[in-house]
Amino acid sequence: MSDKEAAARIKINKLLEAADWRFFADGAAPANIRLEPSVTFKTTDLDALGDNFEKTAKGYIDFLLLDAKGFPFIVLEAKAEDKNPLVGKEQARKYARSQNCRFVILSNGNLHYFWDLERGNPYVITSFPTPDSVVSYQKVTPNPQRLIEEQVRDDYIVLTQRPSYASEAAWKNEAERPGYIQTNKLRFLRPYQLKAIHALQRAVKDGKDRFLFEMATGTGKTLTAAAVIKLFFRSGNARRVLFLVDRLELEDQAKKAFAALLSADLETIIYKENRDDWRRAEIVVTTVQSLLFNNKYQKLFSPTDFDLVISDEAHRSIGGNARAVFDYFIGYKLGLTATPRDYLKRFEHGSTTTRDPREAERRLLLDTYRTFDCENSQPTFRYSLLDGVKEGFLINPTVVDARTEITTELLSEEGFVVSFTDDTGEDQQEAFKQREFEKRFFSDATNQLFCKTFLENALRDPVSGEIGKSIIFAVSQNHAAKLAQILNQMADRMFPGKYQSDFA
Image 1 (cartoon, rainbow, N blue to C red):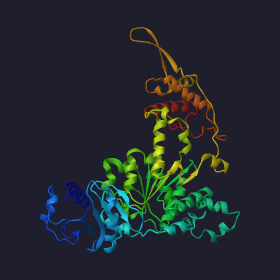
Image 2 (cartoon, rainbow, N blue to C red):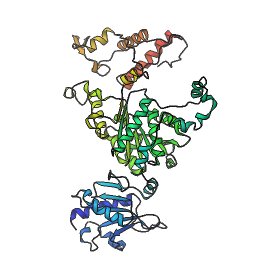
Image 3 (cartoon, helix red, strand yellow):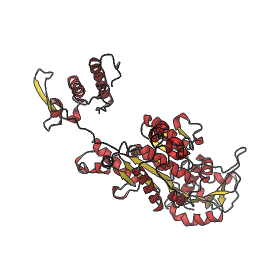
Image 4 (spheres, rainbow, N blue to C red):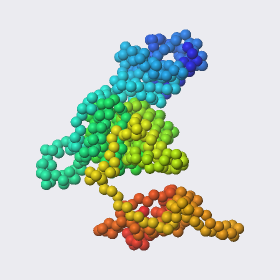
């Protein structure tokens, strides 16, 4: 046996042990690893797998992983480090069939694949699955055809919320129907949301297992995701779903949404609130950051723990290092994003540096399309802002152009020129551009003017006279804190006693 093959086997041994597979009995827990072909071995044999593994006389070839009853469960085909594990694919398939095994692991010690023979192609994994996770995974026998043929109509979610709605008197009475829908918070799928589901079904029919929905803000991506989740569960293609978000506040928002839509059939939990019993839930919601910390996802989860992984705001929640979490799990993947492909056309690729936030956003978006195998940046389904406006589901924003002399100069080619006296008493001038504001150029008077201009020009509620909900984009958290303080002080003068420092 070559040095490279020996090194591969040593690494594989460690990976197996890290995933709770046992070469030897551990108390009441029996050994669940057998070497092919049915070789009996002793502790001294395993010890010989050290640096001189290639000198052992047994000539081990494959590993056969056993279930709790000692029956063949998973075939592990090991190859040398310099060989692609996939070269052993057909050999492993034949051996798995002969042992009545559904699962295969292909590994060279560095690159690993998990292969469910009933799901098609092998998936890359970064660690080996645990016995318990594969037992749970085995409970679902995938049936893509059922998913493809499942009838999804506009009342798909409503039938979970209130199964007998169509037979109730208030629904049958057209005059009472709007109030009935509102009182019971029933959520009917809109035509474009149905098109998204049907597009996913067609993609599955085409053999795809990664999907990307590009839908404008306000068009109900979470409701669409809920319909997808129900589709996978009803068709028997999922037993547990992971929903990834990129911000803490979205965790609670997603949990509440899924509870309102699917709680009659499925339980939703936030991972950090249920660290010890998350397996009881069908939908697990978490921020990607909480799983990334110290590579927690590799220690707490097995690659087979989730059959469907959904990434909300996909270009952010799977960008950079976060993609490792997304790719760690095998199975179907769905990405949701509101950032349109046309964003890529707004500036020239070569004209910006990596420090430019637009360039960073562009790279994340491009990487998102690649992650979901979207050729030529074509998502599985797209519904743009213009589509929503055209069909009456969205409205175009009203633009109020309010400028100050300072903002105009900051945005100009010359910049905002500031005169000052230096340490030597000499009069100096320096020009600042927009990117330098609140970084090199600090001015309380400028922030005061920004806030004053906003309050004077902001649109008001026609009844209460209050300023409508607004978002102000600051340079940094420190800058945001400054603006909030100024706005609260000004609002207190404008609306005495109304907000109690809670305007901003």
